[in-house]
View: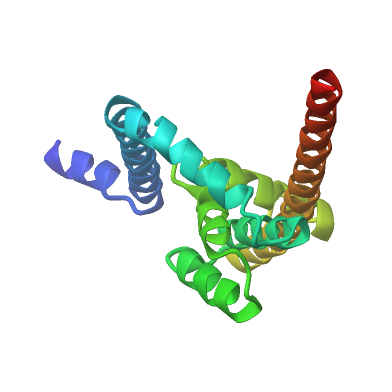
Length: 195
C-alpha cells in the first residue's frame, strides 16, 4: 500500500505541475497581500500630509513658477511621465534627476511626475504595456516563450511611455495657457469694474 502511494505521489510530472500551481498561487497571494497593506498604509497614515494645503501650495508654486516658461514646464512633466513608465525600476528617479539636470528642466516637476508608477498603479502600467506590445508586435498569448513576452512588454512600455508623455505634456501646456487666459480675463474684468 505504501509503495503504491509513493509511486502515485512521486511519479514526476503530475506532482511537479501541482507544485508550480501552488507556487503561483502563493506568489499571487503574497503580491495581493502586499498591495493591500501598502494601500492601507497609504490611506490610513499619509493622506493628511500628502494632500495638505501646504503641499498643494508648494506644487502650485512649482507649476506656476514665473521663472520658467509654460513650454519648459510641459516638457518637464512629459519627461517625468516618460521616466516613470519605462521599465527601469529602481533607477527611474535617478535617471529623471540626471535628465532634468542635463536638459535644464524644472527638476521638481520631473521628479514628481516620474513617481507616476508607484506600487498601486504599477500593475496597471505593466498590463497596459503588455497589451500595447501585443498590439504593436502582433503576438498572441498562446505558445510564446519568455523572450517574446519580454520583448512584447518592452516594446509596449516604450510606446506607452511615449504616448503618455506626449499627452501629459500637451495637457499641461493647455492647462497652463488656459490658466493664463483666465487670469488675464479676470484681471481685465476687475479693472473694468473699478473704472
